[in-house]
Image (tube, rainbow, N blue to C red):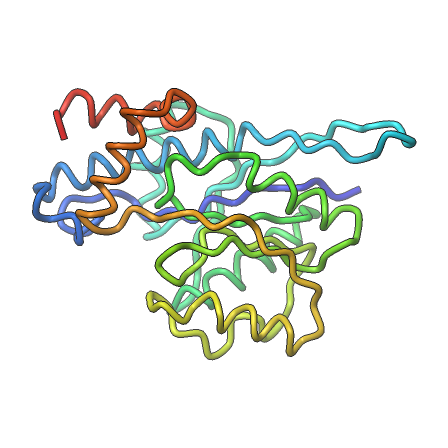
Length: 239
């Protein structure tokens, strides 16, 4: 029997390479530190998911969700492992020349490990509510959807969920543009997939996004619980 999994797509947070669009107002070192906090909170989110399969008529069955970290570059695993401080996760190295190829490769390799359904998330939305992701796992497990996408406000997506690999899903997608979500959804329709659209949320990529994040964490206790590492870093650094 396969097991559902949440896969965190992660890049090792190195100064000068991580969250460069936040420099300034952050320094390269600060941007890397914040990226490390985002990663920590993304893994905590993945580990918090416990979908329940069943209904009021059927017995509700709690399932264990595997947490996977898909990392890049190859030598970055040690950096990411140090951030997690021994948390039990499965590690898979990212492979591919663009995001679509890396997503496809990870989905194929995770499926080969008898994992599924799969939810793939980034580490750019530290306050993302877990309740946005559990419907994706539930719908895929019950067979009421073939794919779930979480639209980001910048036109990309913060999550994609599938039961198994779908060749062609990420072809001709203009990554890091406002067209990425629409193009992926269009591919899903062309391939005859039933799409579940998840609630819209925001990534933290720009100084304006950072201001929004700080305001959310300041005003919302639930957001602080969802992103404890990010909140603590912002509090200590007075950002």
